[in-house]
Image (cartoon, rainbow, N blue to C red):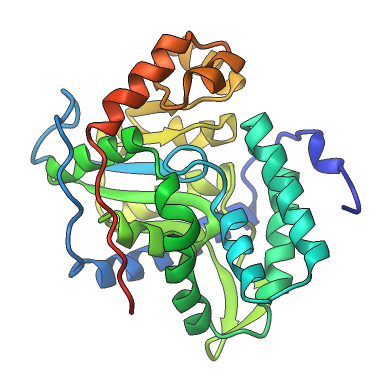
Length: 311
């Protein structure tokens, strides 16, 4: 790895590029949700919590993906699948592996770290057809992602669906990958980083910037306007303090498997917390082991069966 500069977090505020990335992601998400409307719903969750309110059509839920819905980062799993298909060399796989190891140990998304990963991914997919990567993404989901979905978080998403609300993934992962995951989980759609393509071929550039931090909030805001949602009645879920801008937009923020900074922020503001990690992992971040194990056991009862679909 050429640099470890991503080890030092930096604060960022919304910029014009953040707004551009958010609006582009919202538009892509709206288009993808129209395609997903005909998809079969996922299996029902066990027992819906007191919230959400049934029948509130102006409410929706927004879920971060990495380490909130899925263990690890989607882009890393996608990279493993591409390596298996000889899209790049072993040296680049080693970089992906190290970055994934850091992510799992730290449990935190660092903006510069994640941007390094996405720049690597962009160089890998440049010149390839969008349709080709979508088809491969379906296979990679089955190989590396399906078994890493947190059952507890999945049950929360299903509760919103059962209440008649729309549920969106909001992630810095490529919007194509996020859309595949949303479809497999029976969700409404996905907001994700939009990679530029011309005539169906990736150029190796982004539209705006990665959908991270403030850009996620801008995407949610843009989608809420387009879909006539009342953000005060909406919910958002994330594990990372980087998503505080998104969580702060809604009336019902949840900290899921939170990092230390988000946990502190959530407690100060009386936000709801959930942890679905194992007791050992939970202990590392200062959570009583029983809480982590209990939550995981409860979530497992609401696990869904993920069936392989080929398109």
